[in-house]
Image (cartoon, rainbow, N blue to C red; front, top):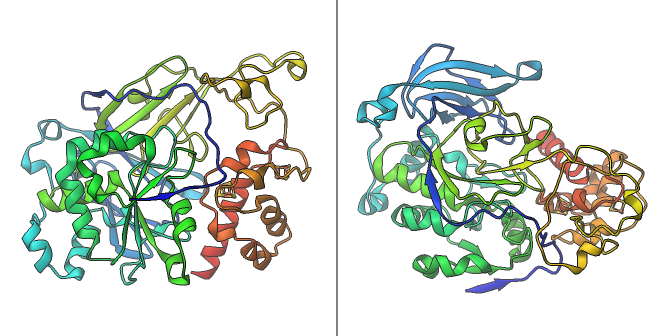
Length: 448
Ligand code: SF4
Ligand code: SF4
């Protein structure tokens, strides 16, 4: 097992680390298929309100390749189709019926199961088609824009990340402890697409991953975001071809493996919830579960995000997306802090060593307060000193603001893994990660 060390990044001392027990929630009344967490998609609706659907029925597809389908994670009827600004599809809500809750076979769209021996005899085209129709091909993402993998492309490597994207993502030991066979079958399947499969795990997760240790090729440090596939690729790549590598999380690889082994769309999901003063267990729930049932009681003035540094801000009425498996419930700080600037800051979570909190290792609570408004860049270089991929986010931002996309690309825009650390550290409150992410997406859209 090789080690990947990153010299930058950040290890925040945040309270709320979930414990490693697992509880199962009762089935919800509704589930949703969200389009809000799917990058680059141009959805085309395939159903209307009140239609009856089974688990695995296609609900929308991607207009850019209509064979890539997004399927219902449950059986019931379409209760609501929610649209956002300019009628952009947000999510499809399904009211579950009794046959879903009893998990009867008639509640599923059934595909032909694939065994280890048939996997070898199946043509690549047949396998790709089954995964696209089954709603799981999109779990494979392609660099640099992390779009759905191009099935006609042969990637130089596929990175399998066991640790998700967030510092509080579900522990891979819990998932793999339950689904080892599906995980290993998924790895076998990936070998049909690339000659190089890189499997990464955080150092702290390794003791619970003993049963799959032989498959782990690279160990990464616990500094955020060393386990992000974008950071792994940046530190491993040696040739131009590797810029279009693919990546997948362990959760999605298990879903693909389970789907192929059983011929049915997998409906379970493990999520973590982090909340002030509450050490929660891991939660076993449904794909597309309603956020309000898993988040529990929540102060309306607070905020729910699907990642500490890079997730979306979710509405309490939303449902979990395919790519989301962690919810952070962050309180509103309430009253403005009086004379906060002269306090020693023993309870502050900050990268800066100007606060006394840097001397203590005890976990700190976060709140939604920004402690000031956006100001002009002061060239402090904090963002450069924290970027795990050695970028200069301030220079890239300035190039993007002046519409000098070539300069932004020269500064390494496409190597940004959207970890969000630069925004977190910026004393001028500049949303650097958002600006870079938008710049990358616009460039990608223009090129497509
Ligand atoms: S530029 Fe910002 S978001 Fe991008 S990798 Fe660097 S720190 Fe992360
Ligand atoms: S951290 Fe913010 S203020 Fe400092 S150089 Fe970067 S963008 Fe400018």
